[in-house]
Length: 193
Image (spheres, rainbow, N blue to C red):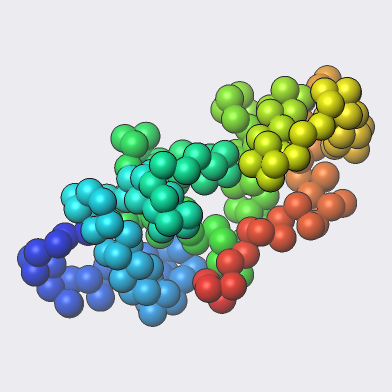
């Protein structure tokens, strides 16, 4: 569903939709309404078509629509469930709901797994972890020699890859997160509490 810029959607219709989504997504009606207001601000920043485009999210977060950020790109891709290059209101609410304090831990673990599974193979592969670590370091202005970067990834895999196949499956990821709960520390947003 796109956000209507016209007055076609009545307050009653919006309230009914908000109640329905709040029940489905474990959000309060007020939280859904607040997300609707946030979305309206985001969508009118560059392209006013009722959808969030990546540039609009970049502008909102970094005050620059051209800044590339590996994490923003990955979150955007996961929120864009229908893969049309834009996020509608339903995708926006659904995507953010996993960051709510009452979202089930299983949903947070699954989202974090999909976030790290860059190639969408149902495994987090050694090369994907290396790429993400390298991207984070590069965005932070830190350069490490390849052998040190490999050692960091090797240590991660020694802890997480129980069967030693250089890929982390969902069950291995879940066990790794249980042993290292700080991996999910960014999976609860204070503004959704």
